[in-house]
Length: 137
Image (cartoon, rainbow, N blue to C red; front, side, top):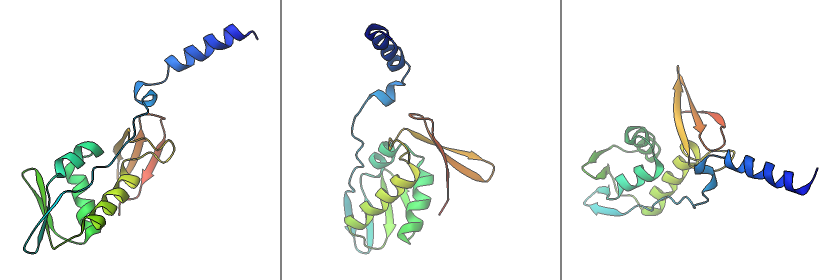
């Protein structure tokens, strides 16, 4: 095999890779901005977190509040939660959600979608094509 045909084959293979895989931007989860009023906590950048994670707000909210062990609701652009919480705790909960429901376990990219089939949910990666069952907590 001569070196030129090898280079051509590499070029052809590289062209078939999806654009979102070629980009190597670092995925960063935004840190929470908190406002505490009496015994309630508000995450003021809730919409930014949801849009960065690219998830449905109701899905995130249900799991997030359940793991936080509290009640809450979306009020405008922010998330209202009963009780006082430290930012380290909430950031860790968001990080755990991201590892389970956003990042692909194979390629570690956030280019995933949650697909439901019957009673089961799957995390489908659009970057590498991996598909993994999600265990709802």
